[in-house]
Amino acid sequence: MNKPAAPSPKAKPAAAPVATKKAGAAAPESAEAPEAPPPFFVLGCVRSGTTMLRDALRMHPNLACPEETHFFRWGEPYGTEAMSRSLSNNAVLKKHREIDGITEPEFAELLRQCGSRAELYTRYMALYLQRRKPGAKRWFDKTPQNVYGALLAASSMQRSKFVHIVRDPINVVASLRIGRIVKVENLTGACNYWNEAVQIVSGLKRAYPARVFELRYEDFVAQPETQLKLLLDFIGEPFDAKWFAQLNTRQIDHKDEGVLSEAEQAVVRRACAQGRRRYGYEGAEGASVKAEGKAKSISNKVPGARKAAKLV
Image (cartoon, rainbow, N blue to C red; front, side, top):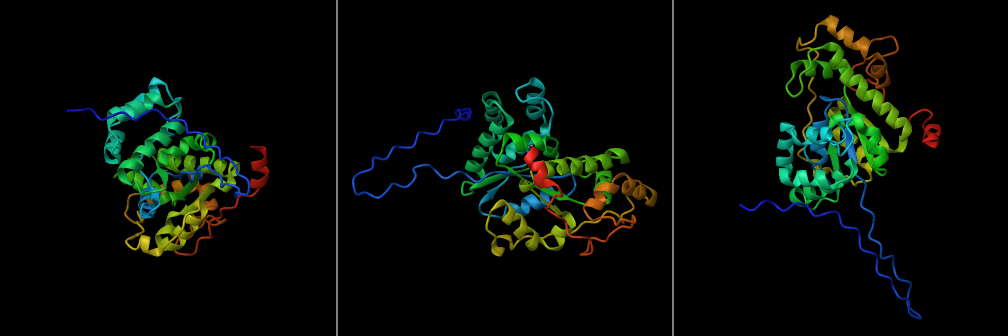
């Protein structure tokens, strides 16, 4: 059985041909190819609706997204054995690559040839688009835990954008307690899944205010078309309702399933109080705010962002 061919090394773009201007001829149009639209990353705490949002965006004809990659998740430097082991030996990621149509020999060769996470993304996604959605013009990634490398992603992929979906932490912690995908029993650990994600995104948004878009899970399931229009406008893609005709969003509420006691819910509210207020889940007096249209509108403007951007 023949082994699949390894991806070829990244070729340098050919120099644009030099046009010779003849007397009386019109000035030639630029021979440079138009710049490809930048990728974007869907980030957030696990169990916050990132998969639901990804599946909706996949309905767009221009957009393609693989299964989770985790290329920016771990802190080990690219090219180290620790980093390579984290990506290569993980059974879940191997399954994801199988779904993406990327063989393990091909992935090993990509890891060997690429010099950075950004290059790995670029070349991996080129293969993915070729095999799974060749008509797409733009790729995006949905790996919630990539939030831990969001600043590195922003600085090494300088035209990339970020979409952060946030969900009431009480529901997130309850979902983690249930553990259908990720199981976390400890309340402190579950709360910090949420706290660390929103804190990192807060810093990312202050550093790169024009490159970060935020939306609430509760708003998306209640008004998916409205939220999709806003998101697509942010990334510069057209909207057509017919592309999303099969979209079916349904809010899942774990708060009343008995997963968390009232005392445990109170612990979550205290531990996540700052972020809950920021995203409209809690009033200034500490009273919970119902998500059904009564929470304040989430803002994609950051106080002091202009000053912060000048300092970057």
